[in-house]
Image (tube, rainbow, N blue to C red; front, side, top):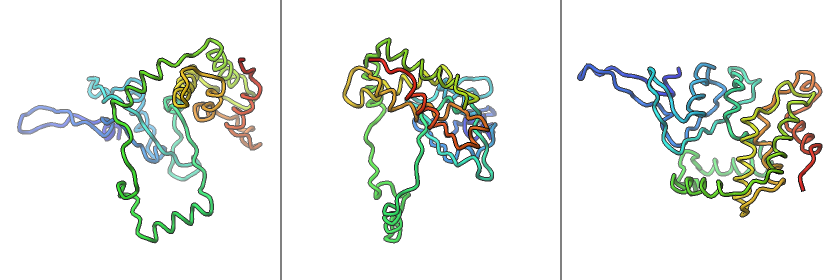
Amino acid sequence: MPSDVTGSLVYDTRSAEFSFQPGPVFTNLLLADEINRTPPKTQSSLLEAMEERQVTVDGTPRPLPDPFLVAATQNPVEYEGTYPLPEAQLDRFLLKLTIPLPSRQDEIDVLTRHAEGFNPRDLHAAGVRPVAGPADLEAARVAVAKTTISPEITAYVVDICRATRESPSLTLGVSPRGATALLATARAWAWLTGRDYVIPDDVKALALPALRHRVQLRPEAEMEGVTADSVINAILAHVPVPR
């Protein structure tokens, strides 16, 4: 139920009043494991949280902690018991990363560690350590905002996104929200690589993860083996690069 995510009002018999009990969405990092196994109504409860950074319960908006972000995993849609995510929700995810199956040697290493008693739930033993806190993320935001974006780069991002709307292989192209996401992630990528300005290679580097979940293929294109990644790569090869 949506209230399982956002929280709900609970009647307190001692005070004879309703009090708000926050749900798991009130956190800095919300991990939604196998998000497409949840019914559409529950999925939609995240729309306001992801866009407005707040949830409204019983008519009262309640702000979420800052920073707030959602990381989700998704099963292939052909798996039984899964629901397709609505376009409005997909568009609110900044990036989509695809994780391939491990190589043969990597898989052998995984099984060997498990056979030797490795517990994946023991994060400390697995070597997982915090590397940044809220203050570090806020400092990074400020630094990224100072990264220069030339008008030519902005136009390049717009041309790429507009080309998806004209592609004969797609029924749905990238929205203006998606163009904003591509520009923002390219800007962050430039800062992470040690530059204070964005170049076309930054846009190309983030085009697939920032756009692949924002487009929809035509059924006939899917039957021919066309993928969202192949369409975006073709567009990147076709759209003129600013110099």
